[in-house]
Length: 160
Image (cartoon, rainbow, N blue to C red; front, top):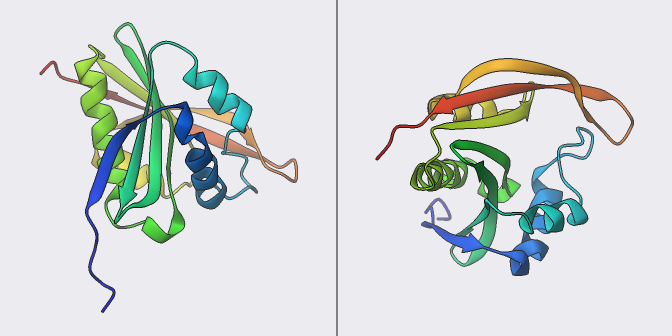
């Protein structure tokens, strides 16, 4: 049977992982919504201070990633993506919890994120303690030019 779930392995990522990051985004983000970043956006972001990339693999296969940043005591989850074949297997939860831990270790007291309204990942964010704090009208522009609203979420972090 193929119902056995592999163990999610997390590792710190860097610019050498951008090929995997781009492949994961191409698989995870439906282009009709315009949520994925371009390769040059990822390169530029990784060059900034306070940025960290976490890669996830399952049974040696690249499964997902999270990109986050901290500026003083403020943090932001910029991207979290999981390949379709690895969804509902704990990869997203493991990545999000890793971002929360790393943010706390960096002295972050509050973590922000934005997500397309209606994105199923909202359930994950709520389970991990994020609360909706606002909306951004027409934030995403899909490949057809249609615009989609974003919701903003926030979670306070406790000092460990």
